[in-house]
Structures are given as C-alpha cells and as structure tokens.
Picture (cartoon, rainbow over the protein chains, first blue to last red):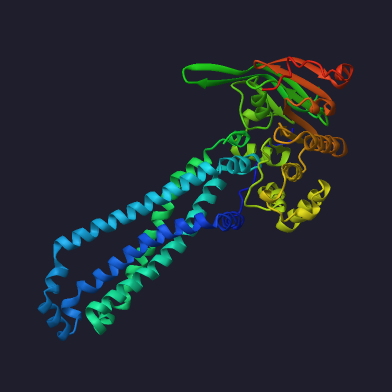
Length: 217
Length: 250
C-alpha cells in the first residue's frame, strides 16, 4: 500500500491572486465596505489630529493667536472635559459601527458564497485556505479604506485648523507627532478590519463541502 | 478481490444523523464494490440515502460505522490534508448546479483544482485549454459562468473534474438542471470519457436516461441497497424502462 499523501499548502501568492479576483469582480460590494472603513478612520484621524493641535496651544501657538483665542473664549472651550468626553464617545461609536459593518458585510458574503466555498473544498481547498482568503480580502479593504480615511481625516483637520488658527496651524502639530498619530490610526484600521473578518472567516472555513451540493439557496 | 480491481469499497457502512431528538439512519448497512473503469449509477428517491452514499464515496462525509476504502485506504483514518489530497487528486466532482466559481473564467475554473494541486500556472493553463477544447469550449475559455448556458457550464465542470486526471468522477445529478437534449449530450460526453480515458464514473441520479450509459445500476431504498442490475439485465427491460417503482422521481 502506498503511503497516504497529503495536499500541499497553497502559497500566499496564489491565495492573494484568488482573493483579488473576487474583490475586483464584486466591485460595488468591495467599494462599499472600503468606504465604511474609510469613513470611520477619517473620523478617527480628524479627531486625533485636531486634538493634537489644540493640546499644545499654550506652548506652540503665537502670542497673537493666544490672545485672540482667549478673547473669543475658545481656549477654555477647547480644554473643557465635557467636550473631550463627548468626542471620545462619538469616536468609539464610529469605530464600533464600522466594526459591526465589516462583520456584517463579511458574514453576508459567507452566506452568499456557500456554494463557492463548498465547491473549493470539494476541489481540494483546505479550511486554512478559506480563512486566508477571507482575511486577505478584508485586509486589502482595510488597508485601502484606512489609507483613504487617513488622507481625508488629515485634510479635514488641517482645513478646519487653518480656519480657526490661521497660519499657526502648521506649527501646532510637529511632523513627528503627526507620524505617531498616523501609525496609531493605521494600526487601528488594520486591527479593526482583520478582527471583524475573523469570525466570518472561521464560519466560512467550518462550512461543509456537502453544502456545495445543496440545490436550493 | 485485490485493492487494485476495486477503486472504492464500501463495507458495512452505516450513517446516523441527528434530527432534533430523533436519530435517522441515512445508510443502514451498505456493502458495495466499485470496479475500476465502470460507469455506475446510484438510483433512488430523495431520502433514500443516495446522496449520503455518494458523499461517503467522495470523502465528503464519514461513516458512523463501517469502512469506505479508496484504493484500499480507509477514508476514516485520514486527516484533513489527506482527505483534501483525495478530493483534489483522486476524485473529480460534477454537481447538479454546476458550481463554477462565478468570479473566474472557464479557464480559471478548470485551473483551480490544479492550483490546489500545486501545478504551475503555465502548465495548468495549457491543460485547462486542452480540456476545454475536448469538451467543445475551446473558444470560450475566457467566458465567465454567467456568459455560458447551463449545458456549457456543465461541460466546463466536466473539464474541471478531469483537471488533475483523477481515476474517479463523481457526478451528483449531472443532468438535473438541464433540458432533455442537453442532458443527453452531457451523459454521452461523460460515458465517452469513461471509456476513452479509463475513468470510473459514479453518478447519483433519478434520470432514466443515465441508465443506458451505465454498466451497473444500484438501487437504494431507505438506506439499503435493494438491487444491483448490470447493463445486460437493464437491456432486457429497456423499452418500457423498467422499475419505475424504485427509480421514481421526487
């Protein structure tokens, strides 16, 4: 009797190629999920940048700006604890909605693609391949959505900054701090999307190949 | 009989399912030897255990009791990667609903099992085009499933089932979603490949047309084989196509 052979693990390059084909084919869905991520991350970036700007008004703003802000009563308003906790709440909710959106979109995609998943398993696809397929799809949308969101968020924060603080805006947030903020935002975006895809990916992988045989939807 | 004569041996296979509190025996003890190179049809009404037996043979389901031997190897003892190897290299699946991956072209669909098998893209593409040519779709290799008719999709599925040159083709109601004429073409094509390429075809069906192409027909009722007929026995009765009682439709 010949020894039992086992299937090779599909290289990542191939899984990525298959994932990309799917994303391109389901363009509208891909776009919607990416937008959902971009919106939440734009909000996060915007809040972090504008908080970064206002946090150091006392030591970074020019005297003229400080006097103007004090006159308008904006300095106290910006520092108020109420306003800050309100912002934190809104931020949390935005991220949560985005997270739920991703989980929901991915779960729907698992249900819709039961036959495709079952077929792939019948043809020799492993559970780990299905998990990778879903995680890569979501990671791609996460990276694109996050970068898009970061760009939008930074632009919004600076447009608003220039409106409030004029030319001083450019000194309020040094490049080093901005870079740290962007790294944090990027990390948040990626963790959010991958975490959102974990459960749906697991569900997809656990589907039985026999499901491919079901003739009714 | 040695392992090489029988491609699949089913020995005393029972399969129990839990349906709520109730236990249902989908297979109540089935023994069946499938010979290399034969065209075997499994007939039976829905709920007869036909699909369960079919899934057992393809390594899609495991028996509660008994053994399923593929090339003499017990499926039950295999781990996930061995089972995946079996599905990828030893068995070609054809489904009632065609089951082409909608995001892929005909060529990419045929290439998929080869990709899973680790074949290079160039080689897989060459073989996929050759197989599509063979099923008469050489010019439509870049069409997506949505751009193909049902019969054409099933032909792509036949090409895909042959991708890794498996010994065994498992066809689950391959004509179930096709009109009469197209269904006949598909059956002819399947039976031609069995003979030409020495493939074993096992088909679950309740289509009488499948009988004429079969070397043997296994009738399944309530999870048990009630009779097995050879082509010679079927020939005698063809004309009135016999045994509608056991081969009844849904």
